[in-house]
Amino acid sequence: MNSKPEGIIIFDTTLRDGEQSPGATLNIDEKLTIAKQLARLGVDVIEAGFAFASPGDFEAVQKIAEVVGVEDGPVICSLARSRHDDIKAAAEAIKPAAKGRIHTFLATSDIHLQYKLKKTRSEVLEIAGEMVAYAKSFVQDVEFSPEDAGRSDPEFLYEVLERVIAAGATTVNIPDTVGFITPSEFGALIKGIKENVPNIDQAIISVHGHNDLGLAVANFLEAVKNGARQLECTINGIGERAGNAALEELVMALHVRRQYFNPFFGRPVESEKALTNIDTRQIYKTSRLVSNLTGMLVQPNKAIVGANAFSHESGIHQDGVLKNKLTYEIMDAQLIGLTDNQIVLGKLSGRNAFRSRLQELGYDLSESDLNKAFVRFKDIADKKKEISDRDLEAIVNDETQQAPDLFKLELVQISCGSNARPTATITLRLPDGAEITDAAIGTGPVDAIYKAINRIANVPNQLIEYSVQSVTAGIDAIGEVTIRLKDENRIFTGHAANTDIIVASAQAYVNALNRLYSSMHSQRKHAQMASQET
Image (cartoon, rainbow, N blue to C red):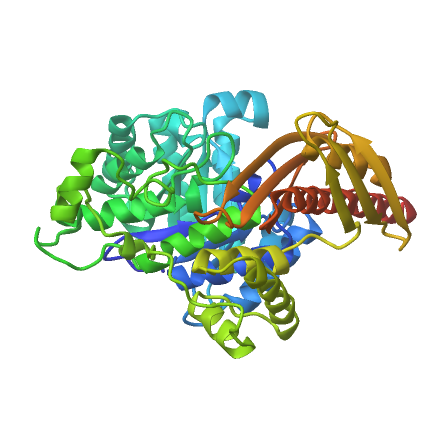
């Protein structure tokens, strides 16, 4: 990874920056599942987390380094502040990986220096060089980010970059931390760095950017034209605030417009050689997986992976596409792994056929998870005549990626109608094993369910989002429900799928409640341990 790339290095930060999206918190198993899929997708670097942030983050980075960071797999990276403890934790976490990277950062803009760091430029310059050298004592592959580079004084930025490269940084990442910069400005910034940092040829220039003004992807493409060769991005563009530059949009822009970008890589215009190592046929599957596990739904009009991305409503467009797809489609849906829903299995299908189809879809389940998913598949197949690949994905994700089973839903019963008061009867098994049944009246059936669950569970929370969408078309479609609950300052997501959306709504709520309750008890446990130590 230290040698100059012929194309673009794709640095995926879904598991670090993407997970910072409110409510997108993932457990270790979910992070590992996504990391495995990112490896299949072909990303070059996985930023697996922020090892020093918490014991859970450290364990997740270490597990991903061990399982996914194999010899022919991606580089496994951990973020670290420019502090000895952070860098040491990052080094320890990525140690099992065949190829590990430490990514350390320090702000360089005057506004950050004055209000956040309370340090002078000379102090920051000294710390940056020292911390990169310290990281270099653990690994050969070190990345440095001057945080808020987009609002930093270019002359000071050049000085910092020269210092960290001299100290051993192999990649220098230029972040538009607040999503403030425009494409022409970003291009000029990268061009200035190439022209004014004497030792820049010893490092790869990377870019990182947020989408606050909707310009992240455009900014990155302009940076590529001016010499950036690593792009830091996330699946579906998830991340803090308005999110990050979206991996799928960047990759497909570089793929579809190869002839335009080829000259910037010294290639003949007509070259068909890919500009990234991404297997584009894995894009849609990866998008779905991240959406399901994080609970971050993809908007229908989202570029590349949205439900409407390859749909045509206009009669003129439909006519043109029927005659020749090129009239209104610039890429084939199959290129991103999106195919028409095929009827692959039915209620008479056996366990081996079920396992085989899941493996074709990229799911490698343990015996326990396969058993759970197969029982659920048989149940759905009895209610639904046609089982599609998307149905199978929903079944597997719903059965194998659940929160800790603390509260367990045993019964959901609803009474409602045009002249009735919506009433829900719920039986819930508590963490101590006791079963309690209660009923509540609400403004609708879902409201009644949630009021009844809250009365039994007695866990303070605020419902901030409820959404439901069908997996496929048809009256018997599986409905996917996503819930977001908030306690004092954190957001927890719950997800469930069922042919009965009322049942799915109850299951999703309990799923989110379990995450919240588990987090509460984990915090109490850590607090008790800390008090015992002191």
